[in-house]
Length: 242
Image (cartoon, rainbow, N blue to C red; front, top):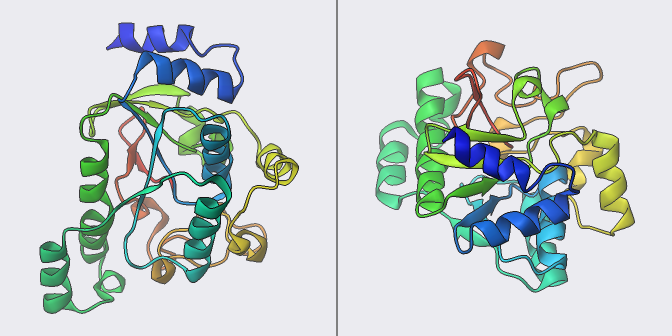
């Protein structure tokens, strides 16, 4: 696997994100995929892919509990680019069993319940989305959290058995905002209301001045338990992308 990672590094090093994505689309034809949750970073990368007609499949996890503002950005993105964004939903049998047994908001009651909900609504659909692909593009940036500062722009995801590439890993949030503004890219208005990280509506709140980037996610839990398993860092710490 180290040879594969080195090969990818050789085809991306020193290039801007669009050039890197174009090279990787050629290296992995039909086997490269990008996950979006319609946040700032993901909207910037979506623009790079759609505006340049790069042959990279774009998908999102439709958990059924997203903010109305997120659905609005999703629809505006479809209208602007005229491209397809594939939606992956939870398996309805598993979701129904959980809700029937524990109600719609069981995730507030315990960490185990919350992880069960994340697994049904996000982890299992993600594995279906990634199946058959060799390269996963994400919007992860180094400055988003302490864990992410120790990641690499190119890495192997052991949990999902796939290579990941973070094209704007070294961008600052100001650079992301400037790119969004310069290209008139639709973005989630919740970002302007104190939501740097936007996931499911019941599990996300605004961040107060001085709080950590991810303080608004699962705010009722201890900081050490704030993970859902979408991403595994280089030291096997679990982190998320929304």
